[in-house]
Amino acid sequence: MAKKKLLVLTGGGDCPGLNAVIRGIVKRANNESDWEVVGSIEAFNGVLSSPQRLMPLNNETTAGIHVKGGTILKTTNKGNPLEFAIEKPDGTIDIADRSDELIEKIKKLGVEAVVNIGGDGSQRISQKLFEKGLNIIGVPKTIDNDLSATDFTFGFRTAVQIATDSFDKLVTTAESHHRVMIMEVMGRDAGWIALHTAIAGGAEVCLIPEIPYDIDKVVQKINDRYEDGRGFVNIVIAEGAKSKGGPVTGQKSDEAGYENLRLRGVAFVLSEQLKKAGCKADIRETVLGHVQRGGTPIAFDRILATMFGVKAMEMVLNKEFGRMASYRNNKITSVSIKEAISAYNLVDKNSFMVQASRGMGISFGD
Ligand code: F6P
Image (cartoon, rainbow, N blue to C red; front, side, top):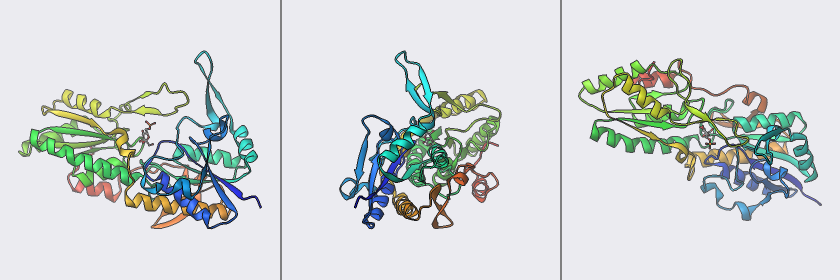
C-alpha cells in the first residue's frame, strides 16, 4: 500500500536547532508504518522549481543531524509563494502569486500534510495556505524570540550564549583600555537577545527597540562610570534599537524578493551620537551579525527543537492543521497559527526582567 506523504520545509533565516526538528519529525514518523517524509529544498522553492528539488527524509539522511547548525533542507527568505519575485530578462522584477500553483503541485506529489518550520514571516505564509485549504502545521523558529504564543523559540538560547561569550571577550578590552565597547546583536523588533546578554554579561547599558534611548542619558551613565574611577563601559545594543524619535539603522536590500529592511550598523550610529553628545572616552564597535545564528545548538535548543519535531508529527497524525507547536508554561502544546502571528513577543518595559536589570544598575537610556 502506498504510504502517506509528509512534506517538511524550513523557511526564513537559518537558526540553530532546525535540523533537530527535522530529525524529531522523522524519528516519530518512523513509528508509523504508513507514513513517509520528504523535504522541500529552500522552503517552498523546492516544490515550485522545475525540476523540483526534493529530498527523502529518513534515518539515513537525518542521522546525527541534531548536532549540526543550519538546515540540511537549506532555506531562503526570498521564497514567499504569495508574492514570488520573478526576475525578467531586463533585470526588473515581477511579483506573482504562485500559491494556487504551489498547492496544485503539492497535491500532485501526493502529499497529505505539510510542516513549515519558520518564523513570523513563514507562519504568515502557512496561515494563508491553510486558508486556501492546505493541510499545514507550523513549528516556530527564530533566534529573536519574537513570536508570541510560545514562551521560547529554539535557537534563541544558543544566540544568547554566543552573544554572552562574545560580550565577555569585549569586557577584557574595555577594562584594559578604559574604553566604551559597543556590541550590536540581532533583534529586529524585539530586544530579547540584547536584554539577556546584558544581564548575563553584566553590561552597563542595554539599548533595545522597545525602549527608544535618549543619547544624553546614555552619556550621563558613561560619565558617571568614569567619575567612579572604574573607567570603562560595556554597551549591548539590538540592531533594531533607535534613539527617541529617530529612525532604525538599515538599508533596503537590492536582493530580489527580500522583503525586510537589512538592519545593521546601529553600533556605529550610536558611537557617532555619543561623540557628538560630548562623550570623551575612546569607543570601539563590534557588530556580531550572523555568528549568533551559526554553529552547534546548545543542549536546551536541541531538546526544545526535538520536542517540537515530535509534537509536529503527532499534530499531523491528529490532523491538527492550521496550528503551530508551542512551548508554554514548561509544556509542549499547540496554538492556532492565526493566534501565533497576531502579535509580536516584545520585551515589556514594565516586566520584572527589565525592572531587575534597572535594579542591577543597567541603563536603558530612557
Ligand atoms: O529574524 C532573525 C534575524 O536574525 C534578524 O534578527 C535579522 O535582522 C535577520 O534575521 C537577518 O537576516 P539575513 O540572514 O537575511 O541577513
